[in-house]
Each structure stands twice: as C-alpha cells, then as structure tokens.
View 1 (cartoon, one colour):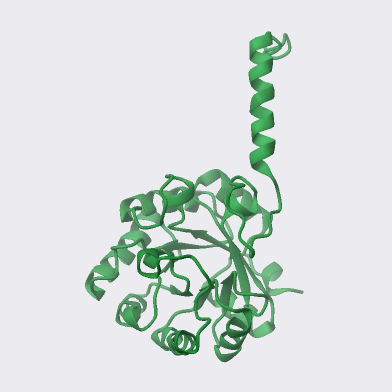
View 2: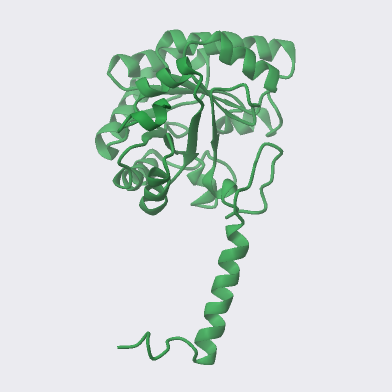
Length: 271
C-alpha cells in the first residue's frame, strides 16, 4: 500500500515519508476553486498556487508583476477547493528579497489570509536567513533552486541552469543550506538530470523536479501547459496530457453556430 493512498490528508511530513519510502510526489499548479477541486479529487499530492499566475492568469510576460495581494486571492480560491492535497503558495517577487522581516510578514499574511499549508520561495544562500525566520515562526517552507523565474532579468534567458561547474557547485551547496535552514522540500527547475539526481540523493528532504529529469523525488507541471490550454509553450520537459485549447475552441465555435442558427436552445432546453 502506498503512503499516498493510506493518508487522509497530505502534509509536509507525508512528503518526507514518501521520500524515505521511494514513492514519487505528484504536484501541479492551480489558481482557482474549480480546478483545485478537480485536482484534489483526482488525488494529486501537492497543489502549488504558483506565481506563474502572473503569466497564465494575468497575461504578463514574466512572474515579476504579480503582487502579494493577488497571490493571496488566488490561494484563497484554491484552498476552498481542497480537502486532501497539500497547498503551497509562492511568495511573489518583492515580498521577501529585501530582508527577513518583510519575508516573515509576507509569509504570515499568506498563511493567515488564505488558509494555505506552506509557502515557497526562490533562491539559495541569499534567502537562508529569511527561511530560518519563517520556519521558526511555524510556517513550512519549500525551496526553489536552478532556474528561478523571478530572477529572469538577471539571467536574461530561460535556458538550462547549472551546466557549468561553478554554478553546479553553488546549487549543491545551496540545496544543503536550504535543508539545514528547515525547508521540507526543494523544487529543482531546469537543471541537468545528472545533477538533479545527485542533489536528490544527497538530501533527506524530497526534491520536486520541473525539467530536471526522473531522478527527482517528484514532479511538478503548470496546469495550463500539461492540459494543453496554452499550446504555444512546448519546452522539452513538458508532457501534454490533453489539448484543451483545441477542444475548447471547437466547442465554442459549435456553440456560436448553434446560437446563430437558432438550434440552441431547443424545446427541451427551454422552460
């Protein structure tokens, strides 16, 4: 019997047990009540209220513009649809980088105002003090290393990170620092699969990969990408399970035809 199926409620401790048992963690993003409810009922382990809402919900080019208030709103909607999954919320750009006091205040707001179970933030040694402060306050923290989208203007590209020895070594050290600071899990984004597997094996906490190979202890995808709601984004790491963009467009086109022709509503669909 898998740990996933045994527990009634997924917690941070559940993920640690899954790592120890060699059971993979499933994680997907959600931003509203309806999809959160569907994913929870399907049995997903972790629902991430990602700052990717800036892209897929608000239409921004990067994750940078989304605000703390907007993240809290999306988290509130998601939490209402969850019975079993662990809900993690991204701290958005500008809500934690300047100092640990602001980081702690931002994390407290998310937890109190949304009812979520955990927060996630990007970075390594630069944010360790903030992680320690947040964890000390009783708030679980998920880390995020490798490609960190909030730093896209620094990187200037979404290419694979940590391919060179210097950056790879920093990532190894940062992963250990995050574990020691109290993170219960770490997202590894778009790094070489060999490095991700090495880091995963070196930690007692689970790693969640996105574009980081099968050696991670779990995987995460953005729902709009995985479900094919957005067919313009097709990176190498993405497996698209549906083509909702095409299906939705076809359905709406048929609806328009039915309205224009007078075929909808029918007598059975009228009072």
